[in-house]
Length: 295
Ligand code: SF4
Image (cartoon, rainbow, N blue to C red; front, side, top):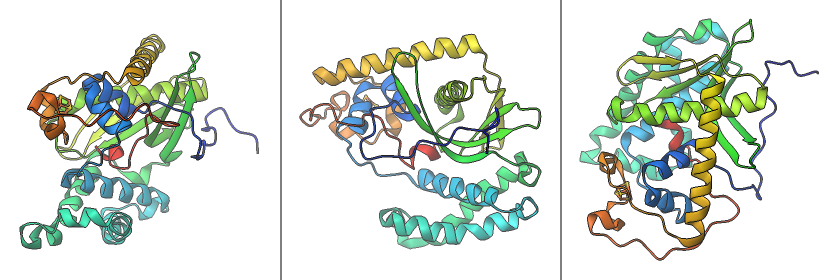
């Protein structure tokens, strides 16, 4: 079958020997605080997920399953029916997540799927999924810029109108205040817009953020000149990462975002001592986790 101009090229499958690449989460980490990037991408120090992150992962997975159903079945009751079986799968894959909800005598363990259900209710107040036919959900995308910098990530949803216009949709489920998360979210969306532009040859028509905690949405239309500037920004970030990677000089950058950092105890800004630098990781310096995708 010939691929139409609006179809996504087949996603590159993960391989054992992948080339180092920049993901939106890790690029954003480096921009926020090079030391945070080091802890996550180089030392790969495990972090304790927050309940909000786990809840967000569940809601993302339920929405992905919902869009796999025939359009007429994409109703609130069906979405809520999916919560328990999807959580059973996720908790089997990540048994440590269930411990989070067993604190406080286990009251949270019984109540938290309902809290995830509230995010789904908010989702249905923002759009009607039965009226949409996304081209892709949780789409893995990867491309290489002219400079040789590889970009890799996952897009929550790609909608393509009959007229060929492309919309990138991202669900935001995090607990961080929106004004703090918005700059990071827009960085992430421009990242995906650039990747899709490079893959398809056309600038996506619209970027859309759906905030499932407060029921707000934000749309934005990128333009070519802006994405070219953003491309140069990413190339500069990658060069800075490689330079820091050679020397191990990843500076701490204290900000109000430190309140959401899992590494305060080992951060010099808070009296801690980082572990000895393990050296630049090969072959991959910038992967995303499933929790990154549910911020
Ligand atoms: S606590 Fe703040 S300064 Fe320290 S590593 Fe985390 S984000 Fe960086």
